[in-house]
Image (cartoon, rainbow, N blue to C red; front, side, top):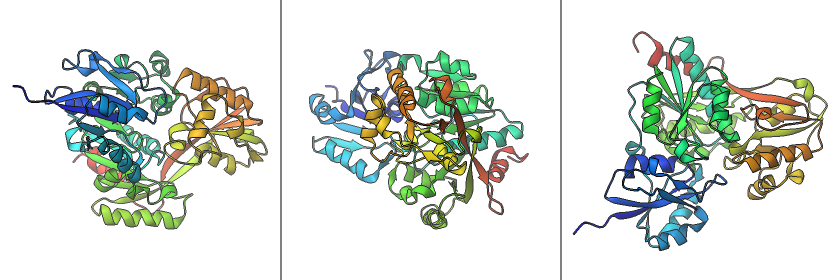
Length: 445
């Protein structure tokens, strides 16, 4: 008589959940995965993980339910174990999810990175963080520039953001802005991909990271893992970087799995030191010495620049900032707000009273978001409601702090200034470039 297969439900948000399934469960006949739950990202539940990805053990694919139905699914599907497989959760929330699962009589599991990190044939630099919005993107661009200056071919593999047709997103390659249109990407995907391809760097993303890594290796001397949220790398890093944020000092001790990155990283970066309080920078440095004493701590500045300061000075402006950083990243403002203040805006208009449709739902769900408008566009309707909200706000100009060309997606009738951050070395401080040079770029590397 065949042994009973353990019935598994994977709790996710269209990223880590699929990767864990591919690495641990897809070919393992000891388990029977009943499906996934989905949260954090609007509109990604009630899809199917398709047969082209689920493999021969699951010829019909796998269902995806909203996490709100967790208890119902556990009971109706006779689930033995629930696997938590998404990121940027405070420790209390993790235990609340454990309580929801255990109250149904099921076990609760988190899979360690040793079981899900793929080994590359090429050197890998991984950029991770303790929270969403610490400055991973800035740091990734910094790493890319260092490698390119040394004549190395570097390819970016971005943490998954498969919010559309999963069967078409197995392995995606982005080289030009036209590729973004070809793959019908969301605003959130554009925010992550466009900033690299506009600088001539190829980006890979999708769902099956074994295939993605194999394709990236064909074009790269060095592979850069550009992390999402505060998740751990999908590839085994030769250099593991973790970015911390002094505007959220202490979060490096209280968020999953960001604390893991903080404890394991080869290098810890404390970013935004030029605008944060010195005591908060010192607090993170002290925590790093306590939890990860082997890792050098590098303190960096995050410098904001803006292309049209004349649109801001003396004007009433609306600030539009990176969506995930403002929402589940729990930040109150980003580059747009900093640029508006620095460039003499007469007034920064709060967008909440003017929110339309799905954008009103965003403000209702995230009450801490008040100063800025999150650039949310996970669906065509949400993008339309974002545009309608911008149009409804009584202002002279818009300041965009999202790292993509917002006007390529929505039509903004008002003048728009674009703000961006760059990570910069501090005078007299250790430099990340020196570590990269020694590890990968010197003749001895």
